[in-house]
Amino acid sequence: MHYKHVMLAVGLDMDASSLVYKAEEIAVSNGAKLSIIHVDMDIASFYDGILSIDLSEHEDAAHHNSVAMMRKLLDGLSTPIHKHLLYSGTIEDEVYRGVIENNVDLLVMGHHKSNMLTQMFLSPSEPLVRAMPCDLLLLKL
Image 1: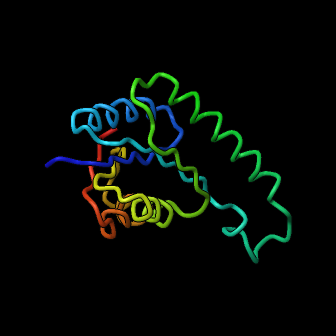
Image 2: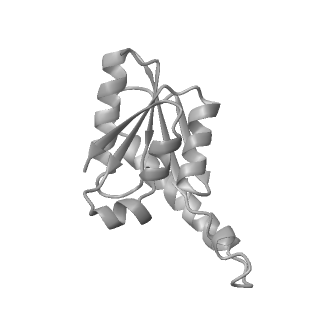
């Protein structure tokens, strides 16, 4: 299959750089655009109704930290990034939105080895697998 727009959903952990280079390789081999998406958890909505404190300062700091880490991560690429998306919210909702809004035909994600219980209840990739409107490539980390 020939892809036109490859999007990498990446966390900012120690496995991120290997995923970036693998996604770049896939995009180049297909002559496709390469976009990157990262989703910061929306802490304020997670604790809404539980805590009565203003978390906006913490969220701003986390956002600036994510931007800096992403810039560092993408510095070594030889392929230009078509779009770099940094959203805040739930992973499955924001990645799905990024795929739809940007006409992505292949989503690349890393996937850590886990047991069946973790897969069923804690995996952010499981809802994406069910709902994704494009091809999905999970790369083992």
